[in-house]
Length: 499
Image (cartoon, rainbow, N blue to C red; front, side, top):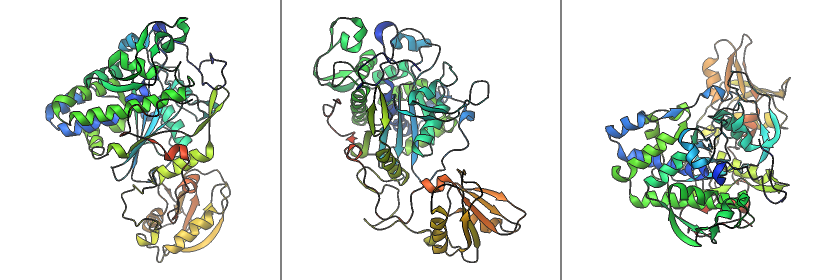
C-alpha cells in the first residue's frame, strides 16, 4: 500500500506513476463488462474450432486461498467479482509504463446477474474504500492476520506476488457484502487494449478538452492536446488513456473517474450488441478476453465459460445498471455509508433490482409477500430444538416461527453456549438423517453433524441472520444514489463526472 501524494481532503489517494505517467489499474474497470460481453458472444458461436482455441488460452488461479468460512448461496442469481490487475510484467509493461514485481489492483466491481437472467447490475468499489480485510492465504501456505481499516485495493497485494491475490480480494468482497461470490475474474493491461481493438474501437465522450498534463500532473506543463471535448472513438492505448484521465475534470477524484468508466462499459456493451453475435465479429474479442483474463477454477474451461455466457445472452441494455458502493469522503480516503450499503446488499440478496423489481425468477404478484416455506417444506412429525448461536436478538424466535409455520414441532428455543457461529449447524441423532435434511431445507447453506444424542438441534449462525426474511412483503427502500443508477442504454455523454 502506498502513501497518498495529495493534500486535498476531497480527493482519494493518487498512485505514484511509472515511466510514461501511467497510473495503476484504473482502466481495467471497464474490462470487467468485457468479461460478460465476450462470454455472451462465445455462446453464440458454438463451433468446435472456437472451443478448441478458447481451451488453450484459459488461465486459472489457485482457489485454496478462498476462505471456507464464507457466505452461503442464498439466491438463484450469480455474483461475479472482476478485478483489474496493474501487473507490469511481460507485455503489460508497454501499456503500464515501467516495471513492477507486485501485482496491484486499483479497480474492482461485483457483477450481480439476477436469477431471471434478464437483469444485471455492476457495483463499483472505490479503490480507497476503508474496510476490514480478513485473513488471507500467503504464497507459503500460511494465512495472514486480518487487517482493520485499510484500503480495499490492499487485499490484492497480500503476499506481494506478481500475480496478485485474487482469492484475498474475493474473501474481502464477501466480508464486505455478505454475498457469496460465485466466480472471480482478473484482467490485465494488454488484454484490455487488445479487446478494445477487437471490437473496432469504443465510442466515448469527454466533458472538456484533455491535455497531457491532465493525464500526468507530474509533467509540470499543460502539454499537447490528447482529446477534444465531445464524442469520439477510442481503442488500444487511447482507450487506456481515456479511462485513466482523472485530473482537470470535475473534482479530479477517483469517483468521477469511476463514472466515466461506467459510461465506457455501457458504450462497449452497445457496440458489441450493434455488431451482432456472429463468429466473424466476436471471435477476436473472445480470444483477446481469454488470453488476458485469469479465472477461478469454476470458469476454468471452455465449456464452463460457454455455459456461463449462455446465461447472459438475454440481458437487455436497459436492465443492465452501474452503481458505485454508497460512499463519503473521509480525509483522502473513502468511507462506506453503511446503512445505504446494507440496503443495496440486501436488495441483491433478495434478487431485487434498483427499480424494485423482483428479478428472482419467481412468479409473484406485485406487493404480495414471498412464499412461505410451508408451501414447499412439510415438517409434520419432526421435532426440532432451536438455539441462537449469534448476538442477534430474537433470531431463534424468528426461526422457530418459520419452522412452526412449516409444520415442524419446536420443542425448545434458547441461546447457545457460544454466540460466535457463522454457518448454521444442524445436529441429528441416530436414525434422523432424512428428517434432518428436511430441516435443512429451511436453512440454506447449513452444515450437518451426526450426534450420539437423540433429536434434532439447529444452532443458528450469522448467515441466517443476514439472509433476507422470506416472509417480508415490503423491502427497505434503496438510497437515491443507488436507485438512480446508470443504465447501459443511457447516452454516453450523460453524467460523466463527479464534482
